[in-house]
Image (tube, one colour):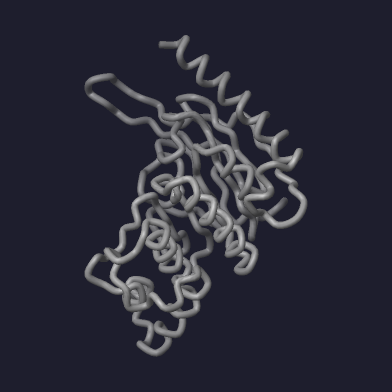
Length: 262
């Protein structure tokens, strides 16, 4: 039996709402992420993507099912799962260096050691020279680089990313995608990444889980095999466009079916 880094087994989440009664956000979702793999989740708006990643990160309880990390059941948040959100969640009064060091300080890592680790990841995300800058002095893309460096500095078993580039302009977003693809390759970090952007899903993912409309289920799992490095030039490859069209057709049908259900 294959061992997975992260596994979701029959995850179901029902929200009890007094106005509308019970609302099932996700329904018997199964997914697996192998060690060192970059897995994307894409789906129509409202399909439960964020609910799913919050359950995997321990921020939401599940109604039924199980989350396994290295085959062990997990409950609640843990340092083994690092999370990066669309909002940067940086401490505005702390410098880049101090923001990246924050988690290490909480873990009682020595001052010299945490400074060394922070500098390593600041360099990895291309922010050397900005160690003493405050968040208000940084662009959106730079702030997200700090958030990624801070999370990686804690060396989580898996990185959970919820539309981290969603607030960035199109050009900055592609730059950040290339950066993350490079970081993934260099660090062999296991990543589960949620997006509504099909180009982003195909550009970054080794595999893509396509979800259905609410209640969210896994509609299909696609393998992505693109030649060469993952860069903006990949966006026009025939292999890229073929996978993109498959996903577009699936999501279009889900959206149309959802509209007819109204």
